Structures are given as C-alpha cells and as structure tokens.
Image (cartoon, rainbow, N blue to C red; front, side, top):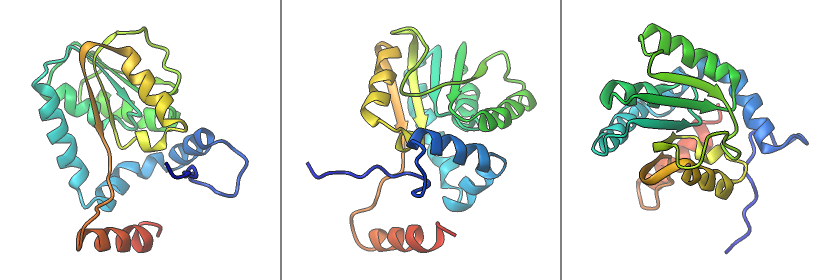
Length: 188
C-alpha cells in the first residue's frame, strides 16, 4: 500500500488536521451552504435527497449525523424519514450555530439536537443508534479508521451506516473535467 500524506487545509501550520479543519469550518460557516451549492452545481442537494431516500427504506427511529455541518442531511432525514430523534454532531461550533438556526426556522427542534463533538471519540453509548450517517465529512477525519470504527461502535446491530462522499472519476472525459475543475476553479 503506498504511503499517503495527510491532506490538511493549511499546510503552513503546526496545528493538527483536526484543529485546522475546525478553524477552517468555523471561518467559512456563514458561506458554507452557498459554497456547496456553487461548487457542486447544486448536485449536493440531489445526492442528499437520494441518500436519505435509500436510508428511509430501513425506517430508522434514531439517527446520528456525524460531521453534520449546518444540518442539511439531518433536516432532510427529519423531513423524509420522520424518526423519533436525530443527533447532529460536528466539531465546528459556528457550523452548529447556523444549523440550529435552520432547525428552529423549520420547526424541527423536537426531532433534531445539534451537539459539538469529535467524530473520532464519540461520546455516545455503544449500539445506541439505528442509523449513523455522514455527508461530505469523512474526508476531514484526522484518522479515518478511528472515525469509521467509532461510527460502527455506536450503531445498533443490524443498523445502517450511510456515507455520502465525493469520489474521483477515473475515466475520460469526467476525469479530465474533474481535474480541471478541482485544480483550477475550486481553489479560487
């Protein structure tokens, strides 16, 4: 297996990846939702809907949304699945603040609870959720194996793990378009 250098948001710092991710998301929180829509050409909304539609078939009553950000996936789950409880957890207090505002506006405070937390050291009991989900967040884990292990730990036996994440296309012409977009336009 080739050596993989960890990808960090800020390469010129001695702060851990986790600290850098927290700082980055706290900083971009007010713009995050609009950035997602622009950078994905709105496809992120469709992907979330499709993922939740798939999860709805399992009819989970309790859901943990890891790296919830501003709560878009949790909100979609509450709307479609109508579970008893959703816990949205994120490392960024500023993202959670915006998520809480959205949840209040949508009248979902009785279903969705937003909490600060670390995906690699979950404070939840073992086997406590029917479903654990994450959208566009696992790539930001400092230790992917530890984060995934924690997600499985809090999942009830027979529960559902849902991870929605970007992948890198491997074939022409999508591969070339992807590389052009992410190397030229995305950094701007």
